[in-house]
Image (tube, rainbow, N blue to C red; front, side, top):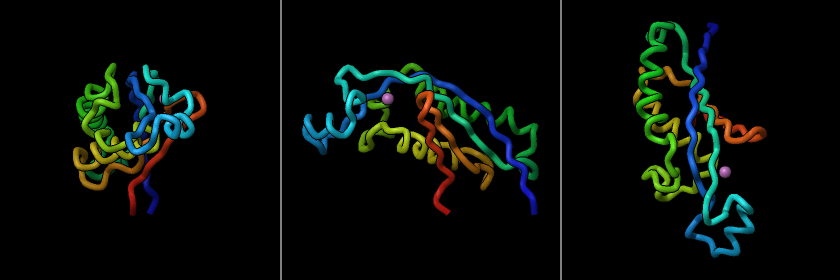
Amino acid sequence: MSQVHVTRRYRFCAAHRLHTEQLSPEENWAAFGKCNNPNGHGHNYVVLVTVASGGAQDSCDLDRLDQVVNEKIVERFDHLDLNRDPAFAALTTTGENLVKVIWDILKPALPSDSLRKIGVIETRDNYFEYGGTA
Ligand code: NI
C-alpha cells in the first residue's frame, strides 16, 4: 500500500555550545573545535516535520500540526540557549541529539503513528535526520 507523506518546514534561531562536563577542556576542544567556544554561537535552525497524510492525518490537520510544532518546538527553543533547556541537561547540543529531542517531544503530541521523520538543518552543509527506532 502506498503512503503519502507531507512535510512542513519550521524555523527557530538558537544559541548553543558543544561541550560536555565528561571531558576536560582540552578534550572538549579536540572533540568540538570552534563549536566549543565558551561564548557559544547561534544557528538559524530549520526543522522539517514529516507526517503520514490521509486517515487520521489529512491536510486539514496541518493547522493542528502547525499549532503543536509552534507551541512545543518553536516557542520552546526560539531565541534561547539550547544548553540551558532541560532536554539537554545530560546531552550535548549536537544536531544528532537535537533531532532526537524534537522527535521525542513531538511523537506523543501528534496523532498516533502519524510522525514519520524529523529533519534538522543546522548549517548550510549540516543536515540531521531521525525516523524513530522501529
Ligand atoms: Ni553550532
